[in-house]
Image (cartoon, rainbow, N blue to C red):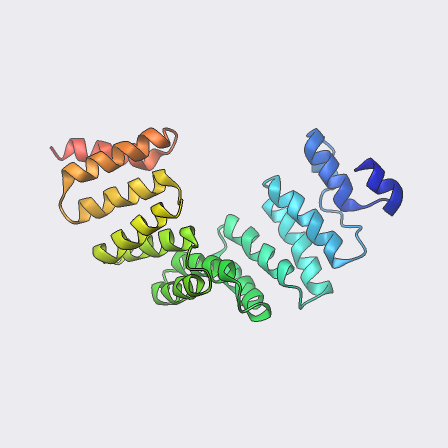
Length: 222
């Protein structure tokens, strides 16, 4: 990074990256100052802030980048990601809508907008976006998983199980797979299978509360 800076001159993104790797306290003092001259510099800086979990500061960088170059896909895409982390689903859906308009073949754009629709309880719109994401990228495991979870919310257990098992075969997070299979089992009245899958999820992710809570519910119902 020092060698690059010697060639390019001072860059806010390089400073942010250096502070990120050094865990420098100064990252918290001036991280919102954007001295980059291009929208790409702001995007790079925003990505470092996003990686650091500083979603509000990152969102500011992506907003500045989108104003400087409104037709840049990545500015809007990462702004949507920040708003997703900040639990601002309406703003997230809006940002991903612009990103999709700029790049209609973006499977991940449709996937993330689908997540925003779910958070807004707009399940029909969410299904349309998950379906579109899977048309564009049929092996997008997380889209299959989340479409299955959406079907579970709608108590469409057969569709939910099909998508979640397909997601597992494509490498989706196994603890999430087993936990939601347990919920499907419970919805179908198969408490023995629900327990087995909940135990698998709890073993794979011991710090995740939901599988443990489900096991307590199953114990209480005995």
